Length: 231
Ligand code: BV8
Ligand code: ZN
Image (tube, rainbow, N blue to C red):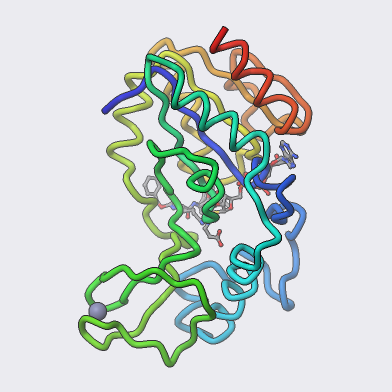
């Protein structure tokens, strides 16, 4: 179902929960750039390295030290209380929106807590470390993180573009606007006359495509904006 409000979130919405953003983590991770590790080529070349990269991030997420923050909670409240409907499209692979109570949610770049079979696409939940030794329960094929890597097609793009073309308000929160096609969503929404808002710590690469911009931490900006919308 389409929604009057479409929200795009990026790593900045989870930053205050203690999850490192890409810009903060950027440059070298185990001597590799994230763009080199998070690619199909990187996985083919060194699957053990890529499993290690995601195991480290999954351990942080399931370790009990990371909680949804006031921004995640405010967005869940918006979905529950706003009559026009709210859809969250997240670039994040953490489960903090779900844990905050959001339901109408699309993980366009996949999910850290799920694995996908490279042979039959069977999805399975994964809370512990994965490795090259893992085999698909359905067909015995090898498993990969259910994550969209650079050069791969994001998930549910048809649903996302339908929602962008039907929304009245598009809000991007905590994203640097470096990665496409997500970085182009504001322009699509503006094209159909939606009001576009950027809520971020600093201007993104695509700040000029927004009608309204507010800068500061998400845990301050998002609850305040949601209260305005619900008032
Ligand atoms: C695709 C999963 C074809 C993995 C991710 C050359 C030019 C243009 C494009 C390309 C190009 N070469 C290649 C491309 C395409 C490429 C791309 O855009 N590359 C970039 C690097 C140039 N894109 C792709 O490959 C995509 N697929 O294009 O397929 C296609 C095209 C069109 C239509 C159909 C098909 C697939 C990309 C998905 C890659 N996977 N994630 C993983 O997580 O390990 S991307 C990953 O990085 C995230 O998901 C996210 O998308 C991106 C990081 O962005 P952010 O979330 O914005 O995080 P970042 O750290 O950058 O910024 C954080 C922001 O928060 C900052 O602005 C900061 O100021 C702010 N912030 C920080 N703290 C706070 C805060 N804000 C508020 N409060 C705070 N406390
Ligand atoms: Zn399989």
